[in-house]
Amino acid sequence: MLAFLRTVVLLAWSLARVLASRAVGRGRGLREFRRAYAADNLLSLSPDERAFMDDARGCIACGLCSLGALPAEIRANSHGNMNLFLAASRSMPEYGVVLDDFAAADEGTLEALEANCPAQVPMRALVRFVRRKGQALAGNGPSTA
Ligand code: SF4
Image 1 (cartoon, protein in one colour):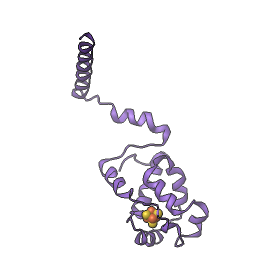
Image 2 (cartoon, helix red, strand yellow):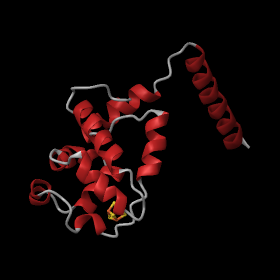
Image 3 (cartoon, protein in one colour):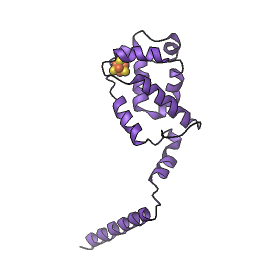
Image 4 (cartoon, protein in one colour):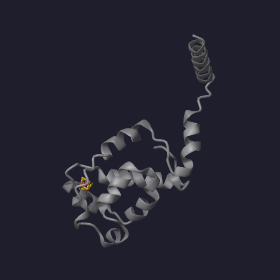
């Protein structure tokens, strides 16, 4: 019975602290997130960016985009387009590497790859997203759109 009462008191105290913190506008969630994950190259996402990432995660790793139709500059520098799109849509900490590989990707090539993608991965938008976030990670742009 004593343990139960102690638990109730602790929960009530925690709830009161959270509510009081919110009431005076001192929510720390986003600030704490940025502090905790900056070293891991993770940025916060806006609701629109989260929705976009849900759309961009459709890659089924079929490998079609790694077969031809990509400029030699990209091919020479990458582990294949499939790996790039998988990393770009799933792993922000790898954006530094992916950004270098995407440097030579032009809209026309990406459009052609996109047209052949069975999962309809939005490659052009994904590359733009990686470039924008890559700049933010390098300290050259806003962290959210
Ligand atoms: S073609 Fe589309 S689904 Fe297939 S590996 Fe490339 S991005 Fe993924």
